[in-house]
Length: 579
Image (cartoon, rainbow, N blue to C red):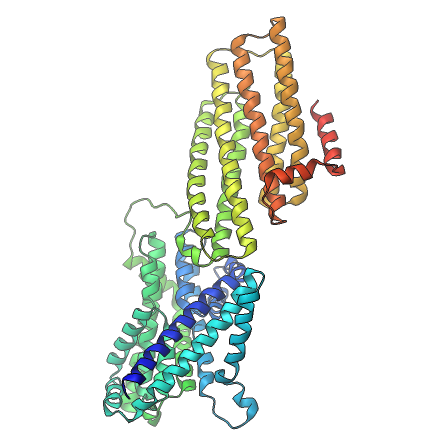
């Protein structure tokens, strides 16, 4: 083996790792919706959690990515530590799929149909298809599919390049002696753990081991301990991911590590006893690509069979290793780990915006009630709600901007725009609720009374605003286009009401039926109520436009009103109701 073979080996390794990374990222984006549905079905049932972890990892080809997601879910309170344990065990089995795919390179036969199964035969076709989809694809999904195919082709080309480069090592005595040294099980475990910790992927390290196996110098006796160590090394990603999280998220990473360490100790002990007492000839046989894939699967399946029934003990161990500190912890509302899986991150944002919407709408309605029934406790609650909505807008706005910087689909991009617009409107609604509260407090402190006619007008306006709040909230939470289309006619009626109430107020002032002081409060109230209706209109328009990937607010409002029979019918009904 000369210097050029070494350079070829390095180049093949780089292509292999790059292809695996590109393919994994694209798979996560492409399967985002499916991942969300699978992870949403998690229950306390061990079998369901295990299958979910297996399926997700088999799809995205990375147990590390699955575990990092699980750490994020636990940190955000979406799933419990107990649920996470079962998913992690499934992820360990799901990651073995990659080794089986790579083992296809070991197929040897003169039969043309068998030869077609070899990656060297079909990856050029996949690369061509992937390139065409990436260059000419019209949407994000097609481009992601093209990236997956190109990533896989690059991965397999890197694997073949590595295998070709190391063939010369078969005649190097030092290389043979190195793998004889790895027959020491403990040393093999340590080497496997260190290599995998460095590249942060057990799938990739197993692939490297398979590439080296083509030399015929890697025996099963050396390969099996290295495979065991690789499962320990892959835990480093979850451990790093748990930094800065709450105690349950840290416990999730500890469970992942302890599961693999305990499984390795048990099976390494069995392996050592068998190799010393029985000395099976298989352990001295050269490991094949298929053999390494089988050993990788067998190890993870056996670990799961041993430890899945004892998942509650793993939970107790994690709690013992990461004890309660007594300090009160808050659940992280948004976790940046989800940014690597945009669809899941977007779903989490959606949930928080709905929480924000419920707070803003309910407290605005409470503020209107304060005009006739002031309550000090409710006043404090309204102010706290406004502060909470400010906080929601801050964290959601920052997070959504970060999310938009990632490669996301056109549909997700439209949803991000919708949420960014909506959080601004819900935050302004909460601001107006405090303004209404302050007007109520001024009426109470200064003992200002409205005339019976003015009270009746204000009740009518408040009822209309209460209904438009309900409509816009319902439309947003349920993504209900029909309800959203009912908002704008009512908003137009509220505009008319404001104008009519202002004219009536001026007439009362002229007749001396209203004081100047009461007039100022009256003007503030109808302004805040009318502007709240405007924000409800904005929210409804965002919903209708997001469905058509059109976020031009002014154009949408114009088309909604112009010669629209539905608008005219609704407008007439609301006019009759509130006049």
